[in-house]
Length: 121
Image (tube, rainbow, N blue to C red):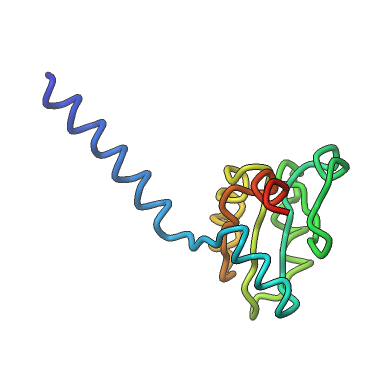
C-alpha cells in the first residue's frame, strides 16, 4: 500500500513539474531592461483593487478573475509578439500564461510579480 501511495504522489509531482516547465519566465530585473529597450506587451492580471495600490506604468490590465478574461486578453493582444504577464506574486500569472499559451500566444511569466517589482524599484 505504501508503494501505491508513493507512486501516486510522485506522479502528481511530475505532472505538476511538467506543467510548469512549458511556461517561460522572466525576472523583474529582466523585465525592467526589456521595458527600457522596447515597447512590449505587458499584461497585469490583478484585480482593480490591487491595481489601485500601484502598477507598472505601461501594463495593460485584464482581471484574471473576470468571466471573460480570455476574450478580453485576446482582443487586446497581438499574437505575433511575446506577451509578458504579471500578477501580485506569480500564481495567477502562471495560470494566465497557460490560458494564453493554449490560444497560441508566446507567453512569459514575470517571476515574483508586482510584489517583487515594487521591492526592486
